[in-house]
Image (cartoon, rainbow, N blue to C red; front, side, top):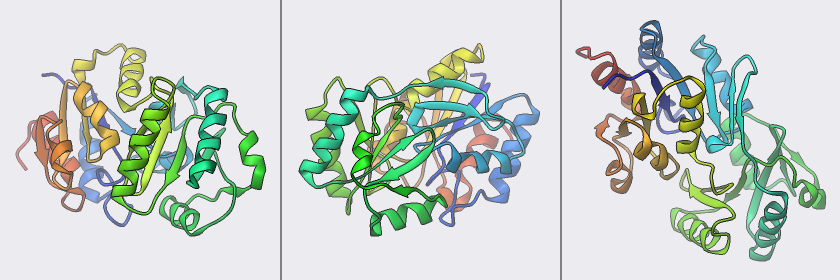
Length: 268
């Protein structure tokens, strides 16, 4: 196994509970990059909420954002864009309204929602991004939409919401749970796995030369498709079953452990 591209999830993986990259993780990534192995971030977050972490690594790396819908480097080079069809976006909005789901939408890397709520507050504080409450005009935003996010109140509700969306919009859109209360809706051919495929192809690499690491349901596609994959110790058992190895959690530098053990082959 010769790893040439290393993809890490952000929340619950590269970032600790304070939303920071630990010194150990940062050092491991820098050492890996010096060996010619390309690090990338693969996240459900919007580009603007992800770029600063790549900047902290002092590397102009390509970032897989919106679960694979936008791949863009720190310096602004676009590698791939994939959007939901406008007609489906409109139908998803209507369904959210019918079901009384709180949802957020994204256009040109800006965050929009109908009204500011406690769910909005929690989201914005969590990623340090401010969006815009635009009332009924949110239903007019149907072009160039990479992702729609439904925020729930529990794991159980998120599981049910994802199931309902995947049944109703089968073949037209795909819903995946990321955090316990987040259900992310993308085009059916968009996932972190598709993001890895697109980026590897652009870089002239095979998918067998890619390693992925993550902790949540939306990481499962890339964990399954990568040549080698590691799962965080905090992940649920069904996610752990999708990886080749399990490493420490985000509070114990699991990313650094994966890099040293399985990429650089160093003792830690």
